[in-house]
Image (cartoon, rainbow, N blue to C red; front, side, top):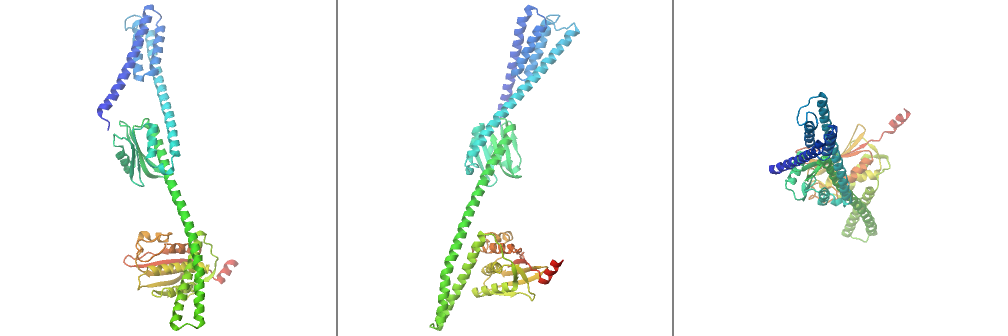
Length: 500
């Protein structure tokens, strides 16, 4: 806070300035009286000269000082120029009316002149403030976007507006940035204004703090110490600062998005290239191994080893095929070629394939007796189901059983894959479908890329279905993913609908 002595000094200076204007005006009245009284002119002449003096006085002095000079001029006019001379006594009503009219005219002129001078000062102040704001905006826009949210922007504002200090508090990092030498605790006041979500004004110390709002959300606060004409500039400076911060954040978000896009493009290209490179030698290994087994020149142990090599090479070939297909799916929009597909057959083939590849894990299959058909592209749907089952096998407990159950009802086919293992925390149950996201509880269980569930959901959604994580019981460790697909309309029903 500003000391009381400083405030008293300000009022004393204003009082002395007003007293000087009164003395100057009174001196002017004395000079006019000294010149006109010996000549004994008609009182209209000194009255006009006094009025001219009052007008000149009002052009430079405040209303109070000008009003005092007006009263002095009327009293002098009555004493020296209106009969009886040298006496404050008026004999004629006409003279009384003239003096009253003269006094009213002087005060009105003084009032209007003071208002006009105040309006001129306000207009000039706003013009200068607007010019300074334009200059500050040009300098802020010339900054690199990443520097617009730092001390350089504060320095521009402080130097442009002649501030003692400028302070910025940002909500995203909770840091206070101060430029200049603050004598009134500007940093703490800025932080407090943000916490209380309200603007702060201290006219005595000329400290003004404004909260920064972007799209209806508070993003920080900016404070100014030593700001003149805060009424017309504080809000504009806050808006300018908020715009600079939003520009910096937008640039950072755009840079991160561009970098992520480039990384995704490179990653997809690498996956595509690796998949192609893997498939050629794997096909050669499979063909050569099959030829060795069929030649009949191998012993029992050698034939068994050749069969193992062929099986593992086939598994690697299937993985390379899935990798290649996923890389293409990540670059292109999923547009399945829909045809009637027996969902039970797709599930059976996927389960059979994974049983061969994961002999140490058990898979229980419940298909039901009713045949369920969906409109789908068999290869894509198989890829999604393999990703879902592979995820369940990878993160389930070693001795547990993965259950695959097919349900049908109300025109919707549901495939539920249940596994027992580390439960997924509630706050991560939706994020597991994000690209490259791996839960905090599974990193030590098995390796992975965080793409399996992402691609599975993309494929299912392209078929008009959904893939969700069912709510887990609070006291259990079972995890159930549910894949829902619209069932195909039977041919008879389709003909009936077309006939209608």
